[in-house]
Image (cartoon, rainbow, N blue to C red; front, side, top):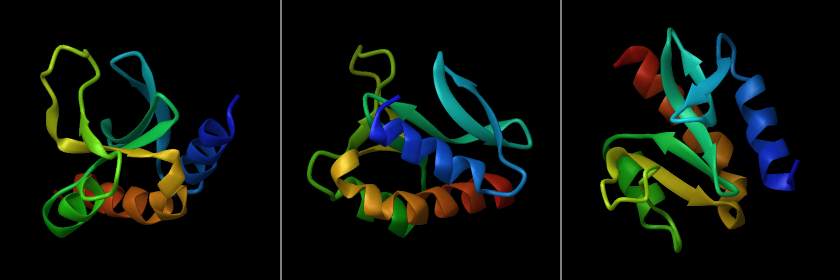
Length: 102
């Protein structure tokens, strides 16, 4: 397990009511059956909206999540590289709140 994957698992595990699952064959955490974060290519991926979406997407190397690799990105999902892992917890909390209250 990479350092990035360990951190992803630690962050997700500390979110109350979050359940480990799969999203497109990738590890994810869900709330009420809906995914809010996942792990892909040593990046943490977040379902975000509004200000947090724009902020996460503005980070160098961040991009819209395209799990198929067929240039069909998921518009609400932002893939954030490990170099910004200090912000992963903040984005995970925002994603949780968005999915849980949305």
